[in-house]
Length: 149
Image 1 (tube, helix red, strand yellow):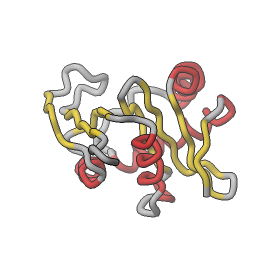
Image 2 (spheres, rainbow, N blue to C red; image 1 turned 90 degrees about the vertical axis):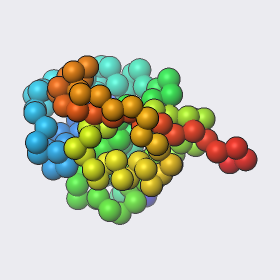
Image 3 (cartoon, rainbow, N blue to C red; image 1 turned 60 degrees about the vertical axis):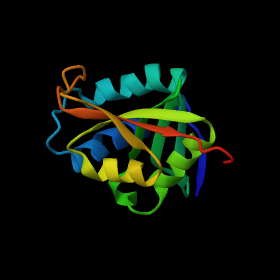
Image 4 (cartoon, rainbow, N blue to C red; image 1 turned 45 degrees about the vertical axis):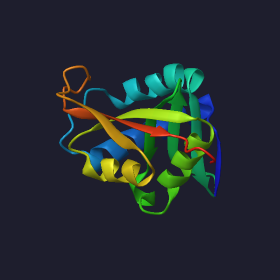
């Protein structure tokens, strides 16, 4: 079990995890992009421009996170590895590299809200979703490194 920096060669597995995780956790969410579009997005925009880490078990990528400029842009875990600590390890690694982090989560995604709250994030702004691609109500969460940590 390890965490390492992602490379472009990881893009296909990252895009696959993105897709299956969203479909499983949020079946109510509209699917706006094809798998090929997701692959292009991660390969050409996310991996080169953000701090992307992957979690591996026996050489198999089980989850990933992407941060940049104080934001946790993505954190997805293969559903086969849910509730095994993979998401927590990726989040703790992201928190260790940042003094504060913001993220957006869909209001309807209570499991994600509970997960981030358990890791010190606070809900700071609710929106009707008109500014996001899916047009679904979302909320901004914020975490700050505690003094003395």
